[in-house]
Figure (cartoon, rainbow, N blue to C red):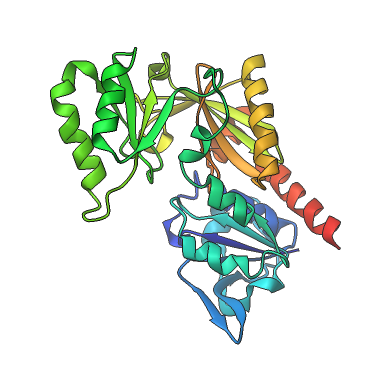
Length: 327
């Protein structure tokens, strides 16, 4: 199998924690030709899409230690036609560059892409969970997306809850996620104006979401592969912070999915699979779906450590099966 990862720079990895590194290591361990590329290094040459790739040189013996592997890897820099790969795995940080998807459109019939291009267009932002049909808010809290400050102020004023969650549409890793409270109503318009106008002449959308009781105790991150849950952990906020993202200082604990959480995963998993989203991370609080990460869901390292497993094996097994089914 020939596989290319579109991702952040290699030297930005934390080898002790990085999820993508674990998938790459598993590919190299199995003898697969593996390359990485930064999203800015795509070109069109003679009608073909090329990537200036860093191809991992073959090793006489691949270290079983992921950290040792990371520091011993050597690369050959090559311009490689993307359609020559069997798999392209999107592992860049959100938000995704729409031009990257435009490049990949040209090879989507030749290469298995994780996740599907059309699926990424539909699901690569926080609007995706809000678009699920859930009229009674059984599994998704009331969610609003707008850049209309007057409308957002009206929603806050009419909410039955004293507090709501506000977050930028293009954020990730818990960045910019805050709680707003009616007791601070005099400040909320100014806050909305800051979030929406921070892009200057191009106002940005924000998400306003019903506060789910229990959020202060953390959330459950579930990894979904091919429509089914393959691992989960509980993420616990740091002291004096309601955000449970590990990148925001949160900690982790082992978690077994409840019946209702499994029900949510299976229901959402069917929709994800239909949209070509093969690998995703769900964030659940008090048995309510809060977010879906479809670009580069992390926490593989934590799931592995807490459950004595290797999630990356299941992921690469899936990729091999997809490539085999196409031949």
